[in-house]
Amino acid sequence: MSGMPTAPLLADLERIVGSEHVLADPALRLGYELDWSGRYRGDALAVVRPAGPEQVAEVVRACRAARVPIVPQGGNTGLVGGSVPRAGAVLLSLRRLTTFEPVDVDGGAVVAAAGATLARVHEAADAAGLAYGVDLAARDSATIGGTIATNAGGIHVFRNGMTRDQVLGVEAVLGDGTLVRRLDAPRKDNTGYALAQLLTGSEGTLGIVTAARLRLLPRRDRRATAFVGLGGVAQAIAVARELRRHLPALDAVEAILADALAVAVRHGGDRPLPGDHAAYLLVEAADVRDPEPDLVAALARIPGTDDTVVASDGAARARLWRLREGLPEDLSREGVPHSIDVALPLPRLAGFIDRLAATVEAAAPGSRLFVFGHLLDGNLHVIVIGPDIDDDTADDAVLALALELGGTVSAEHGIGVAKVGWLARDRSAGDLAAMRAIKHAFDPDGILNPGVLLG
Ligand SMILES: Cc1cc2nc3c(=O)[nH]c(=O)nc-3n(C[C@H](O)[C@H](O)[C@H](O)COP(=O)(O)OP(=O)(O)OC[C@H]3O[C@@H](n4cnc5c(N)ncnc54)[C@H](O)[C@@H]3O)c2cc1C
Image (cartoon, rainbow, N blue to C red):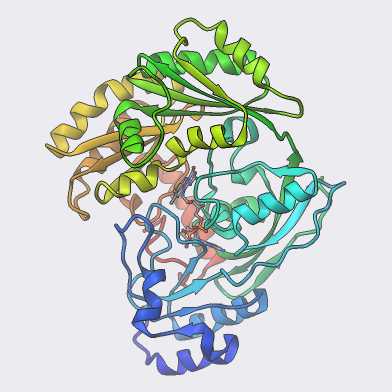
């Protein structure tokens, strides 16, 4: 984008954020330029680390004047390459924005800065006797800004909704440097376009989120967890549906297929059950009183769930959760994962799985296939290991299969750079035209995360 000399811009950026927060040295930039999966690597002009929203706005104005693109980054745990800088871009790290306002207990909300981690928001909510509705395995690194930008899902979506359902207001800097802020409006606020909802899921292409007001929920801190061995995905779906019908405290239903569980056990997870099964469910109930009796009773009335273990103490539950939450890392140790995030209508999910292995084998012969995911949302993470980092043949085949069966090419990770070519196959020409018009209005010079989402 820029043909201009970059030295004046770097001097400007140093004036705005302080020279120690402009990292131009390649060794210092490295941790920001490689994504979590190791699949995407970038090359930034500099990493810039502002301390607050005014500095973010000044950085945006300086970059706009110099026509240099900006890639916002939070915890850099995104899985579609959106947080990795394209050559010559400024990598804007939001990690220094970590302030919290005291929890508004009566209003059931908290205002957190964009760089606060998800784990910190959970801690703050918990200390006030409340809970934040979104949780995911990358909680210690993923930031509020990043989870808003990707509209992150996670393990409680069927109960609490996605990130978009938690965001009550945002503060953000648009592509022309305008600071928009609505963090203290009453809960009932019908005053025009919901900018917070529009920015949620925009993957850093419309604005840079600097803070958000988040809805908090009543805390349900008594938990019980079950691990259930089953004959296959169709049975797992049937069991999950029964649990949803008969267990109001149901809080998480995660599926793990046999090959994925074998990897978790190989990398240090405890073998959870005596028997071997084609599919497993990790089920959790959460309530204000001990939910274990209800969980056990609900499972007992479902035929075919005999090979089950139930845990309610913290250490035993953590051992079960490690099998699921450690999977992304365990699989990374087996090779560079092609991580494909799809969702299907629940009635089509078993048919998708039936065709998946043959589809992947035809596209990438000899590769290895692993499947797990958030079952009640119809959301599966398909991991293919074997193809070269740049070889998208297997990814494309899996996405095509999901679309053919009425699914979507991104359930919760977003489009990023990984799926740009797929957006027009999933969304209509009218949708895309509206999205481009919004992009132009929010970011007239196209400096925010070019190449991501809309290509
Ligand atoms: C082990 C593991 C488990 C995961 N589990 C889940 C899961 O269950 N559900 C799920 O949805 N995701 C999951 N993810 C993906 C990832 O954690 C989420 O996408 C998360 O929302 C990214 O947050 P982040 O702060 O790391 O964002 P980053 O990776 O830094 O950025 C992600 C995108 O958001 C943009 N962005 C970041 N911060 C801002 C900001 N302040 N303003 C504007 N744009 C911004 C970036 O430009 C990029 O496009 C997982 C990842 C890992 C590694």
